[in-house]
Each structure stands twice: as C-alpha cells, then as structure tokens.
Length: 172
Image (cartoon, one colour):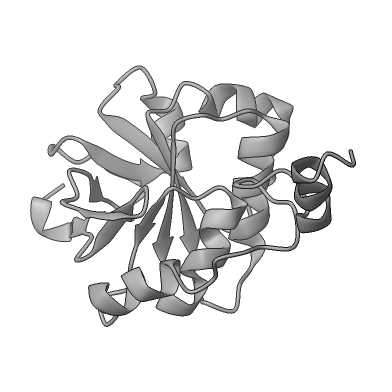
C-alpha cells in the first residue's frame, strides 16, 4: 500500500501536551502498509498482532467483550474512531478499556475530534487526542484547562467532589 494513502495527525495532544505524532493511520482494510509505526483497522491488526509497530483502531460500534479486550491488551496503543462528533460510543469504549479491562497503554481519539470534546474525552480515559484538521492547538490547550473542578467521578478522578471534600475535611 502506498504511503500516500496514510494519514498523519496534524495536531496531536498526548498527556495534555502537544506532541509530534510518530504513528501514521491507515483506514485501508485490505493491505498492510510498509511504513511503521502505523495504526490499522482492527481486523488487519488481529491478523498481524505479533508486529509491535502495528496498533489497532476501533470503529465506534465495536462490541468490546472480555475476549477482544484480552487480545487488545497486547497492543502498544488503541485508537478509537469518532466518525462524527455526535457519535458518543467512543467515550464508552475508552471507559470500558480503562475501568473494566485495565488497559494501561495509550488510548487515542481519532476522526471527528473537536476542541469542545477534549476535556470530556480525557475524563473517559483518552490520553492522546488527534484533532480534526481544522481545529487549532491554542484553542485545544485552552479547552483542556477550561474546568478546574469536576463533580462526578470518572477515569481521571475516581471520587465525586463531595467525597473528596469529606476526605479532605476528615469527615470520611
């Protein structure tokens, strides 16, 4: 497969900081690209998962069960595709990977990733965010710091605000 069919993130934020993306992205399901490292469709990764310079991307409608999660535990990173910013299934996939299946490596949001979503994506377990081409890094960095306190527990903060306050005041 020619490298011209590969995508490269214009703007990647990893662990809250801008970073040069080492990984290319292939959306072609039939052919394994020559370039490495590369993120490929799930079925292609499953067929070649011994190659540590390959990582899978999951479509938003992926049925994530224990067997697939066990396979994915070997991946150097997992990308989750957002085909449209209105499709929220990727948030659930990230939370399941982190909380139920204990996936500790990078989980990357790809596809229609907008600045408005970044804070919520990080709360659900994404630690790498590949912004859509028309999104600006300065706006993204401001969006990540827009909220200083979260009320609900999530992947990033396990306790609700009232629980943290009780613990800090010695009432828990």
